[in-house]
Each structure stands twice: as structure tokens, then as C-alpha cells.
Image (cartoon, rainbow, N blue to C red; front, top):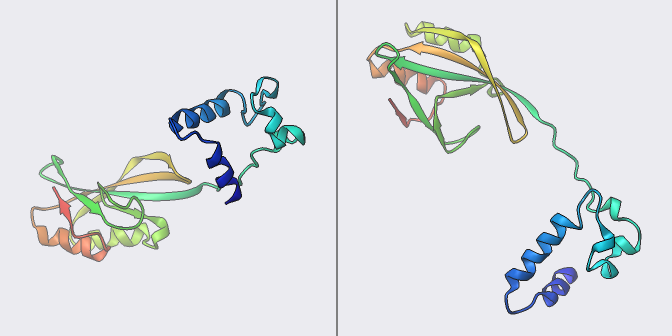
Length: 173
């Protein structure tokens, strides 16, 4: 709080954005995390890190969060000879608030064998495509597998499998 008050007192009332931009420019060109150029710094006389010769410790390194491996199964429900695919609006969990193919994560406790068994029980044909995909997003290393599921025109069968695996109700072709 004391630092905030002190810094706010330094910001000019007129054109405070110019001051902010100057500070960002100073940080990106002179006061760099690695190899700060203190010899040309206009504020080095006020800098505690320079005075204490601790610039190599500033700012302190944050521990990096380790990436989590994720196996994801993308379910491609298709009909009409693969010209239509079903999409859902994801309302919770992984990739919340996105629209796409239904996804199952191995972490969610749904085993692939169980899924394939339930699909077969409903009289649908499913096959795991031989290719997989890899993607990284915010601390996740994703390996994706695609399961192609051929659906008849009967919506009840599709609703049944969506309900069985707790997919959101909102779906579209």
C-alpha cells in the first residue's frame, strides 16, 4: 500500500498515460530482466536493486506450473454419409463455453472401452481413426483421438448416448 501511494504521487496529473508508457518503455529497453543496462538508466540513483547490486535477482522467478498430460477423445457423430456432424455447446469442464465436437477426457473416468461398448449396444457403428493430434494449451499437453460414430436419422438414439455420458443438451447438426 505504501509503495502504491508513493508511485501514485510520482505520476503527473496531466497525461498520466505518457508516464505509464515511459515506464513500460524503460522496462522493455533498459531495465530488462536479463542483462539490465544500468549504466544508461535515468532512475538508477533511486533504484534499490542497483544500489544493493541485486539486479540479477529482480524480479524473482516464479515457479513454473508443470504441464499436465491430457488424453481427449473427440466424438464425431455423423450422418448422411459424413456430410453432417453434431456439435455441442460445452457448458462446463474442459474447454467451457466453447462450441465443438463432444469431448471426453480420460481423467473424467469414462473408459474408452466403456464408451465403445455403449455405442455398440445402441446399434451404432464407431471406429477410432488411426491418426491422433497433439496440442498444448495453458498447462495442458493434449493428445487427441478421434472416434467416428455413424448415426441413423433417429434423434432419440443420439439423445440417449448424449444423456448417457452427460453431454450438455444443446446440440446442433
